[in-house]
Amino acid sequence: MTREEAFIAGHTRYFGAVCKKHPEANGERGTAGAACVKCSLEAVKRYHAKHPDKRKAQSIKDNNKNPEARSAIHKTWREANVAYDAARKQQYRIANLEKVKATYKQHYEANYPRMLAKRNKQHADRLKRTPVWLTSDDHWMIEQAYELAVLRTKMFGFAWHVDHVLPLRGKLVSGLHTPYNMQVIPGMENLRKGNRVQHGQ
Image (cartoon, rainbow, N blue to C red):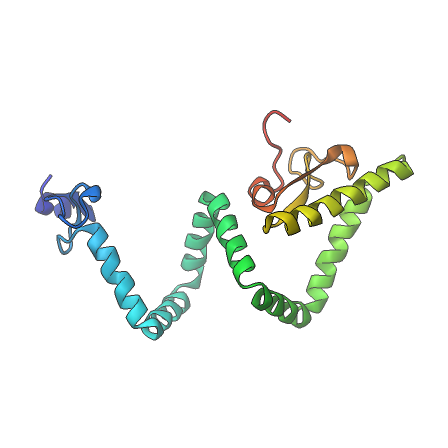
């Protein structure tokens, strides 16, 4: 398919002559300017690096123009890239630990009633899912699970979470807050799992 045919058909890209600089692109080009997609991406990155203020202003303008659409786009992307998004956020937190702490503290203080209500709800949910027949050994094992998560976080340099194999607030089935329903896993895996039950469990 030629560039003209692709343009008439409504396609934004087509395959033409292979770019000498980016042969791995296999000749993929944009129908608007016939430029190599890799070269175009590099040009955009150079422009953004040279004009960060313009990029920020345009981003704010786009968000204000149609915030609902932008929010829907971001939500769709996050749902389709849960693991990548979690890893990216985790890397940022590790690289900007003090900044993240300060931001969280500021957000917590500015939204204290809502944050307190959320924390209390989570605590209440956990209590409701904690059976009365747990022994002192069971409670000790629960504490050990959380201590292990903290230890692994310090050892490996990235977050580890105490995950409930059967989630406490699952949509189809809910588990109990017991040591037999717990596992210590990387935070990225826990975020990807969410309130879902993994197959085979």
